[in-house]
Amino acid sequence: MKTVLIVGAHPDDPEIAMGMRMRWYAMNRARVRVHCLTTGAPGPDGMAVRREECLKAGALLGVDEYTFSSIPDTRFVEHRGQINADLFAVFHETRPDVVYTHYPGDQHLDHSITAQEVTTVALREARNLRYFRSPYSVGFEPNEFFMGTPELLETKVRALKCFASQQQLDMDVFRQLAQVGHRQYLHHRVVEGFPPESSCAEPFSIARQVEFAD
Image 1: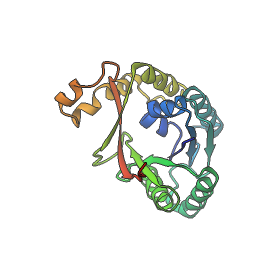
Image 2: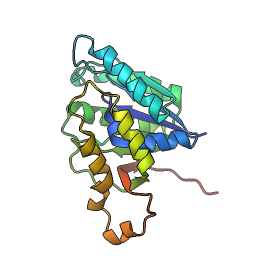
Image 3: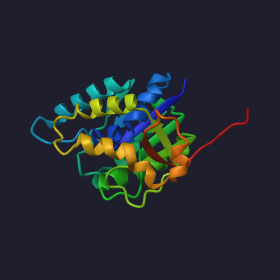
Image 4: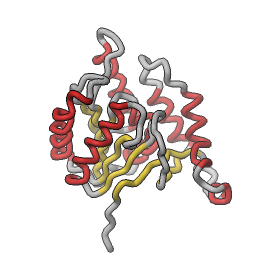
């Protein structure tokens, strides 16, 4: 069984970036674990609210395990030592075959620190490492595209609707990006050869991939 570890800075980061692929892994009997370094704090009871939103979204996507660190939101610089220690513990518990995290070039400092710390640990503890794009990624050039289906996209949208405390999540925007974003990178003649059901995409950047001869 393949084990997939996805590390995000905040609740909803992984779902926005790769909700379709998360669901696809689960449907294909991979073990999927998501780890968020913070639960966020939009209000006095925000941490509990956002944790519950994650768990509901994870259940829709088929996530096996959804865990959290207690790093204060927007205070990642001061807590890098704790982030590193938490990540080593998560990796040792999970023993992932493939790891996903934020792209290192990002305008959000929490995202970029997450990417840097996950990369440091993953290059020692995992064979395969991929970066996902966030709305704040800078200079992201994907070299892998996961082509989803309308059914996978609908499940992703349903999962994102679980994050009701995040009023800025515009489902129409995310749906449109999934349907047209890959055309920025793929020639139309390539896209024309896709199966009709492969109408939406999530882009990734492969940092390291190890393959074995049969």
